[in-house]
Length: 114
Image (cartoon, rainbow, N blue to C red):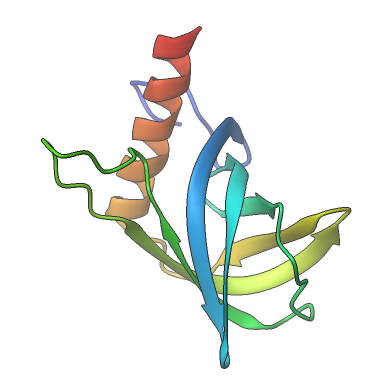
């Protein structure tokens, strides 16, 4: 659990974030519907990679603007299930502090919007 957000590993932050993904020779775009310390749900994708497929996500917390440079976060994992319009990804072992900070930042964005 983090002090700032009260999140545990299993808690998911409901948020809409643009993401770009790649697996094998396939690249695509979708929307992160929710995110946690252990994985993310990607919706609005034209394809559903096979379960077990290694995948790389590039998630943008803030849309880039003329006055601010926004670097996407890179998340590496594998597909663990399908949804009606996308798929879920579990991050590879050894989730970094960078991922924890990103999820904490996403939770703070959601809290500020409510």
